Figure 1 (cartoon, rainbow, N blue to C red):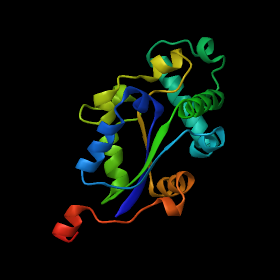
Figure 2: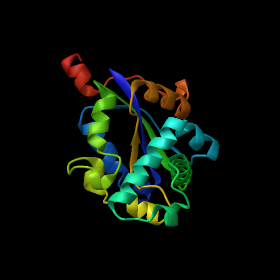
Figure 3: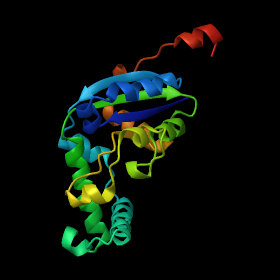
Length: 192
């Protein structure tokens, strides 16, 4: 049994698809052990998104690659070709997006919850997410369209990517007193 953090981001809240997203998780057998609506402060957003050189450079290189693929003038759009500087700009866009409206924070629990939630959510970039995933069914956003507008990719949800990330994020978003232990009906019926 694992726990993972899911954030239903402001774009999902504003579009009115939060309930459908939560329903998908519950129907798969995942248990909600905590949920709350939060308007993220800058401090919380900064703690949520990594700022390591490795992460910034990776994001910057991905952006450079996308610009090359679609024939976008990087220098004209970002003012630089330095991956770390571009990564820092994307990081700032992510902060602004997370703070742009209410977020539903959930802790989901279940067998292989981290991996299963990531599969259900789909690829980070919605245009790469396959149909049947949350992002594949509810979004057509691309990095290029978001970058051209000077903002983060609207991709509906965040899901922890590893055990360490889930533990860090759960502790960031929830106090221990906000996390509940209970049995779902099938746990009573089938002794799971």
